[in-house]
Length: 211
Image 1: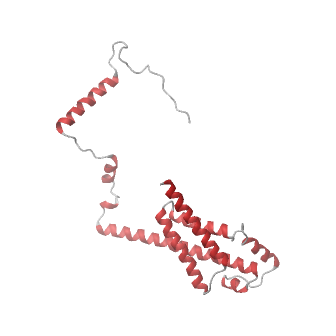
Image 2: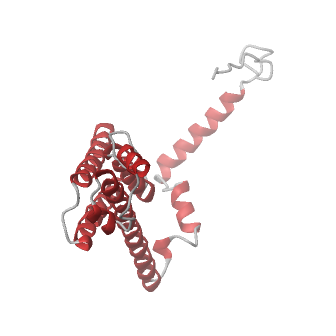
């Protein structure tokens, strides 16, 4: 974007032109008188616009009663707890889908049953499942870990502390899925969690570099 420079000086009266007194001279004189008055009377504290806006804002939290503030704190805690629970649920459902695809791809009936899928799988379904859990597949490590990270980021926003809470919630969701199914999850699930944690660490590192 170009910067426009105003070269139209016709509206300003400069010293030396028709003996006119420059407009800025008058303003400077006023400022000098004001400065002298301040020096004589002592500096008067003037509230900033931000402070004024805070005092004028009837919705400012610090202006509410202790009871209201306590209620707001509880609401905020409940909202954060809901976010963590949402992510944990997302993690478990995502892993369920990944495990189901893994069971179909490998012909492992146990994982298909645990994931709630049909035991009988035809050749076309198995081929698609194998594609889904491949390196670039929808349920592969790369895409699945990215989805988990993106879910967390969507809930936490660009807030490092909240992202750390989301990371803990993600790991808790993984542990709960393992506990619910009563056995260690397939290696692809562990690799996915490791990849997701790496995305979190990369995010923290990027914030430290900016700071």
